[in-house]
Amino acid sequence: MLKEVLIVDTDKLRKARKLKGFSIRDMTSFLGAKSPATYYNIETGKAEPKIGQALKISKLLKEPVTIFFKLKVQQ
Image (cartoon, rainbow, N blue to C red; front, side):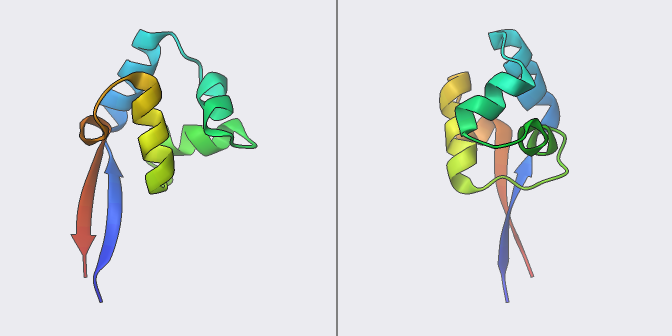
């Protein structure tokens, strides 16, 4: 069975967030998440974002989603 996984380019994501002047709490609030750990785990690659989260993050940072996230198909 094939499984699709979103791979996060953690360096690009962190640099873009800082360049825009957003904190981890800002990103958490924008995503509507309950805890800053939710966004932090995405940014550090510890958690796979949902597609909707990836799209929201890209929209806020004003970059194409493919800059930060790559879709990988695994068996």
